Amino acid sequence: LRIFLEYLMKFKFRNISSPENFTCSHMADVRAEDIIRFKAYLKEYMEKYRKGNLCMIHSFLLIGQSNMAGRGLISEAHEIDSSHILINSNGCWTAMFRPINRDRPFAGVNLAESFAEAYAKKHDVDVGLITCAEGNSKLDDWMPGETLYDNAVSSCRLAARTSEIKGVLWHQG
Image (cartoon, rainbow, N blue to C red; front, side, top):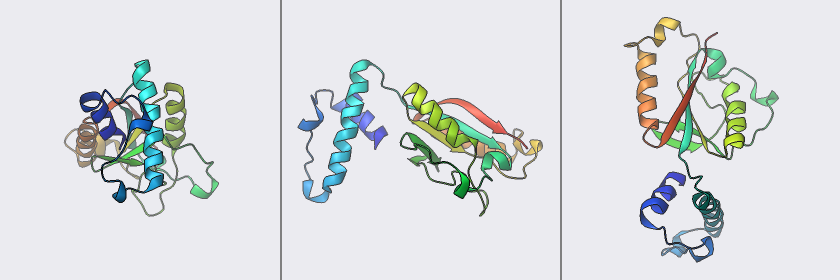
């Protein structure tokens, strides 16, 4: 929704003067709470647009072994504000969920969640997490031409279509 809205605002609808002026031509197909949420996002978006602070998703590649994949117990993890954290799955951004990396049935929390929360607050942006970590992987598995390396590169290429890749979080061990 955010990416689509950014496209509309940037290329199509610069003359929308306020969220209150926004209406949907197919109102019968849209729930009232979705319109309210959309208008709230549109208002936030327009404030950033006017300030010149409009930016894409700042994304980070997550690679390494089990600690990056997430083995912390979800039941013991503190709640985080995930409203500006997205997960890239098959080239599409989706709202953050736990566990963010599903390499094993017993996957849990990892350091990326807290990092993304702090980064989003500090920089006032949405943060995208590109999850490619694999428990029990060896350094050799991350070399060019190997499956994990190729998957990470492919995932980054897809994410780069709609985000700006800002860094890599690598936790091996």
